[in-house]
Amino acid sequence: MKKPARTRAVTATALALAVSAVLTACGGGDADSADTKAANDSPSPGPVAVKDPLVATFDGGLYVLDGESLKPARTIELAGFNRVNPAGDASHVIVSTDSGFRVFNAAEQTFTGVEYKGAKPGHVVRHAGRTVLFTDGTGEVNVFDPESLSGDKKPRGRTYTSAEPHHGVAIELGNGELLTTLGTEEQRTGALVLDENNKEIKRNENCPGVHGEAAAKDEAVAVGCEDGVLLYKDGTFTKVDAPDDYGRIGNQAGSEASPVLLGDYKTDPDAELERPTRISLIDTRTAKLRLVDLGTSYSFRSLGRGPHGEALVLGTNGTLHVIDPETGKVEKKIPVVGEWQEPLDWQQPRPTLFVRDHTAYVSEPGKRKLHAVDIESGEKLTSVTLPKSTNELSGVITGH
Image (tube, rainbow, N blue to C red; front, top):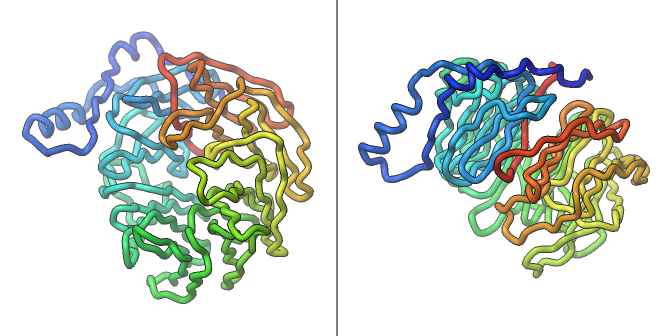
């Protein structure tokens, strides 16, 4: 896959004309708030389009960044704690706000009129040409083709509502089956599979604390459990047990180039915050799990996959570990940022890894920096210092 092409520079004139959209979190709905929102959403002279943009959140808004130089193209003001994920195409990202999922055209640096409202917007999953949103506060699942996001109208898509709201996740497979989690606000137990008509065809409730998902080569899908992972492949559920009674795998990263999934691994159910040094590698061909000790801790924003299926982990020692998923061998250690420690509050900033094509983008909030690294050569391509420390980091998907 090609590296992102150089983005056209934003001219001073265009920046002078750009008016940052001031967007508020869900509030009381008074007349002043409604008038303010209407004024902010009104058309204004747009800035020069950014090719292959990145989007980073900060306390109070979003930075839209040039995909190669990393220089800010525009700053969007947005109150509240916001999260960001690729929408699945070359222009858009999904921003999770206090009021729901909002579609942001990162190339044009503006919010579209598309919004999926609901409390506690959660996981955003891309697979098989479909993007799936799971709203924790309602249990609602929305599925759509990301290539249909142009314009201000919601794309036609599939919906499903869970039996009870919970912190869940869903993924649609290439054959139209929808795998989605089971649970309540108090307890999560497993997953079920629906056919194209939302009729249940499979169920497995042997996955306590189910959290997160990832897809591997040949469309093998796993969700994490507090005692391993639950694997769904070729129409069958298989439990992959952890070697410990409590062996939680809550965050995973998959690649279509590899049959092996990358996961975290925690063993202390009573820890306020466990800082693990081992990662898990789950072979979806054999339903076997391997643990690898990196000698350094990491966070839930540390996992990624390279262009050839490499397992990538950003350690708190500041190093990006490039791991062969077949053998578990750490093949390369790339110094990227200074040493850091995962904060107790999961919403607080920490170095974050986002991978696109052959490039690993890594934030360094303590120094207000953002770095781009070539995964194969280990070369640091560029770095930039931003006005404010960033929190989450994501971008559009290139190479379609």
